[in-house]
Image 1 (cartoon, rainbow, N blue to C red):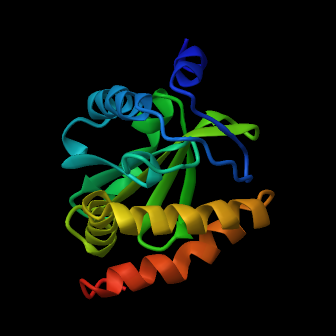
Image 2: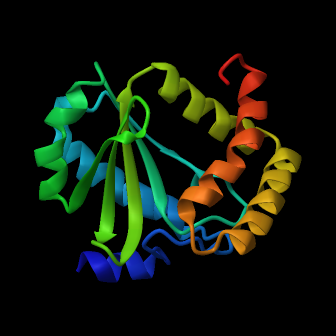
Length: 183
């Protein structure tokens, strides 16, 4: 059932690779569906849940993976999220992939990724960075298109290395974040 739902929403990228898809209006619906599942699983642990990443930016190509930001009181509360997130199909990827971030993935383990959930301190540094970058791109279509062009070139260059693709976007993201003192 869940895999059929992911396919309906056009989600899924082979593990550790990069593939961009045209914008899909169903991505927002996919986020809302997942937000409800996470809220039910985490209850009061989740102070806020937000859709971020490129699937949250209207009109640009994105990896068809829904990025979800989950705000908790303290970073250590991320450990309390492991079991509830596992019950709804998420694997815990650890807290060493992204500093100050507990990372959870959903999809077909070792094959595809459809969702990434980042558990961070609510209103902490990572929360503010991620929300600012999302909102900046949502409010500046020209900047969003510049970002999309960068992503298209990097996706071709690093199609078999999601880590290299992500690292190569860092300078652009840091420049945008520097505007708000968040780099």
